[in-house]
Length: 274
Length: 261
Image (cartoon, rainbow over all chains, first blue to last red; front, side, top):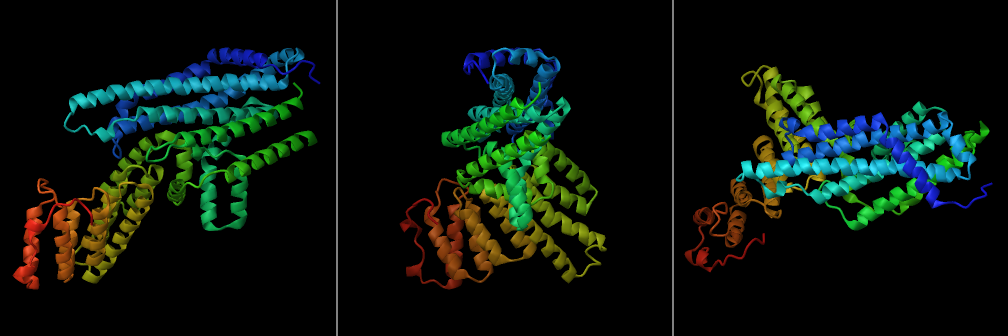
């Protein structure tokens, strides 16, 4: 029975401490450096580009670095920060005070989500810088060959960054849910990683089974499709078009799943011996 | 243990319920459905996409290089497999679809014929069987591309080339050239080739009517439109069809109206 009312201030404090702790993690530094290095060094790989314009290739590659390293960072960081509190008994000390378990988990989630959003923002800013510089070079070096339609839509890059951040927030909530059950950090990381893959693939699997008409597998795929959020929804359309309504829908979709996952994590964490 | 199982079941049930409710609220997205179909129709493509995320452009490029290595060795199954893999990993670049279709239609049958002893040893009938088989594969590739590509002009033109040069189906090629012309920004030459193919099929009256309708749409200051050539062909057809001078096409009365065909 909680004797103090729920406090957003305490949530904020825990989120702040989580963010501070995260910034001290070597893992975070390593992943940010690798991802930023990849984005900055992508020009060295442009000779491997065939299918699309060079700028689009760089944008795609940077987008991949943000998605891949962002996911690895979010999953590892969430599990690490959660279990370090358990293993170092700081959670016990904290929860012995008038702090709700909901506040604890929400604070952890918000701290990691802040890292994820900052990561996406930072990497996207780096990518925009690389692209702007290359675009200027191309315009100067090849004024005749320069095609305006090949110019980068920088607004779209920021939309993509926002969508990545939403995905990472979902991953953080999912990993926190797994961690609330899990006995070991490695299990939570593995569950988060598996969840990341399933979230990307489940939509495709469901479409494939629906087309093949295998009723049992279709039912199973549909169940998985419902349980795991569909990350294909976070992909920008191939023509690059996006709408504010579409963005709001994806945000709401992500918000609902995050809310449910966090509520379940709180429920599970309440029953856990810390 | 019981408590953990109960919690797990509650978690699964709650998430499934959430997903089901959100799914009902989801608006239909035909473009996304089409793309899903393309990706998942290639074995393993979904897994690749899931893992690669934005790196798929680079992965597709590496696969394309790998495909070229096989192409140089005339490795038919390897090339064919990698052509499918490239567009499954990254279906966005038109380059992969078009060049893949060209390799399927023009290169692969030559390799097979060479493997069976060369053009002198393989009978004409057998050569046609091989060429038609590969042309159909190329057309299937173009058809798949159309589900994910917005630039349908290049695809219709490529389809027309293959239908004409490999299938030898003049009517189908004519229809494809016409489709290319009818697309917004379709090239003028597609409209001219359409008329030429009608002529080749003996449909001179149709070709004449087509060119007469085409001429007023051709901007006089655009070399690509080549209005004088179209007029020359109209005159040629008038001679063939023995059109009376008073009924002949009068370009001076044809006011340029812009594209309407």
